[in-house]
Image (cartoon, rainbow, N blue to C red; front, side, top):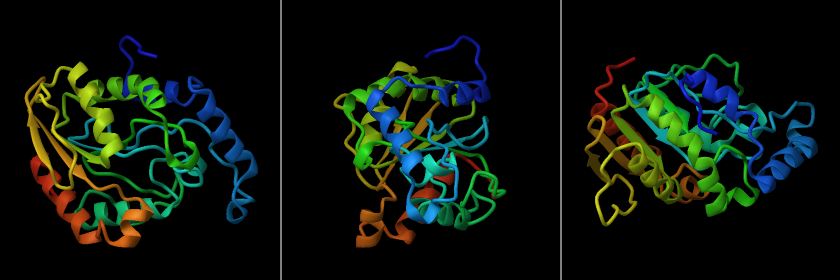
Length: 237
């Protein structure tokens, strides 16, 4: 999985050919073949979904995994589903995205100083990857973060699964994660020493369960992203 001297673009291209997790490969391809009725005329991506955003991003947002009929369909993180609708609206509201919607991979959306990725790059059944799948995919995240490290100043982690996945990756990449490891929570902020000072911020995931029940409101999400933007020292785009 690891490559010597790969650029981020090369890493993304290599990632899309990964077939390391049989259960995930079977599911993502099954979904892409059977489709949802609303998208019956579309060609699904049906492969691992790479990160989205510039290679010199100061802010990195880490989710969970692609949605079966969202990113697994469109080929771009958080694109084409209701979770993405919430996230990109908030990113637009705080000046980190060029538009408030994300419908397909060629819709013109740009992120400003921000990259979105995930600890698991294939759509999992029931949106629940296993710990083994998380660990297998962790090598991709580790290399991605190492490539982003020169500019990366803040990481926002959406949800407890991503939080647990990213802490050991950051440790391996040279950041000093406190012991005991900091617990996940909404708006939790931890500063890590390492290759460069890094701000780690927790945020409830933009899942429909959280947004429909009001556990995560648009205002709460905007507050976290605004704070993360400030910590990353990003100017208005």
